[in-house]
Length: 277
Length: 309
Image 1 (cartoon, each protein chain N blue to C red):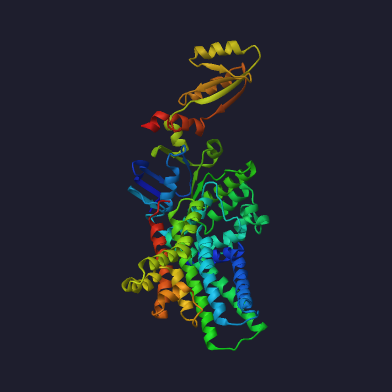
Image 2 (cartoon, chains in turn red, purple):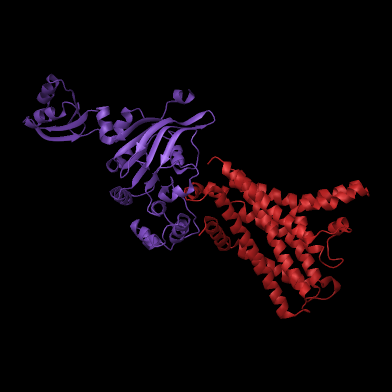
């Protein structure tokens, strides 16, 4: 077997064995069911109701949780092996440094994607069983889109975690950087955009730039993929406010997510090649 | 290609620091060679160069006939046991070997044989996290032998091993030698290593202090042999005087024996004379040890002044 796949298979197994990924799967399933069941509680009724609203809530939630999990499962990829003294052993085997990083990236991404698929798949299956909604092709497409984009979002942060892992010399520093990365992309980036929006007032030129600024953050691209496809009122305010008159081709959004996943990973591979061991 | 490892004027610098400086040596096939030196002498750097994990700054290095730098496929023919080996604690011994065998494209059938060979068959399905240090070291040896490598690098292999496990390890090293493989063992435990190696590479502050077979190194150093004598009661003062007339000074030891330093050149003649002496009831000859040779070469750690320089 190709060494990349060998390493990936080990990381995949480890992620499930360490129970992180199983916990994540259960969390996804519970959250999805909880949101679906209690989503309309404010309107005075419980039960599986609006599919769009459920997906919108899941998107908001996924945008917080998935990056965090991606960073947590992968930040120790290389620096952890260095700390544990296994890095030298691994590198004494017939695989290149690039192959080692690629295997780790692939393994963690697959584990995250499997958790997403299993968690949400389980939730959807339970929803179907409890109260079959009107079956539409649209609903299935939306679920598929959500799982695919969530997996790609996970890959973006696994890639970032790999980069952090290659560039740091101890695990605690890597963990700190991973949390900073999460905070910046999930919270601070949007806050900064919001602040800019408020400060600039109604300047039409600047307003025209914002929708493009969103594309610089994979978390926002993930939201765009899912929310802009939903019906009115389901999206969040920042996005609908900024992108009211803007249509992004879905292919562009997926390509961007893929790009945001590949860029930090490719950087990590190159940086690791040049590192003194 | 003649030898598994050949280097000529090999150098490795980290900025201003010369970790290795002009090393020229060969390591022959079918031999066990000790890689000796104090901490920081350059042993680990040499091992990393041989594994192709770092690039030489100068000179030439050939391992199994090719330059090892980034030659990934070459590592299929090299086994390596890192110093104080740690492995993935969440895997079992068998799972670890299975994973590493896949990476090395070694036949999976070897795994059970190797586990048995290092005495870990009973613990093969236990998590490595529960292994003792000695068991981890033995697992490390097993992984180093995956794929029947032509060259085996063992870095402090007996750390944490009890005497019996140490003997087992050197028995396996002996089998590798008999099988025509080349084994490079880095160790601080000179007395333990000595009976098991054919030759040594001795490094000091990045320079090669000595290289060759133990016999040749011993000849070169011409260190005296040590002779211990037990005499008849009352005969010692007279014997001491006699030895002194013969130009030999003997020191009494706390155990009641006399200790003589006998020059290599006159060893046999002296021994014949001593054996014929009726005052002597027992005699013990000790050849210079690797540790004495090491001291004679001045291979100990550098002084503070040297480090500052």
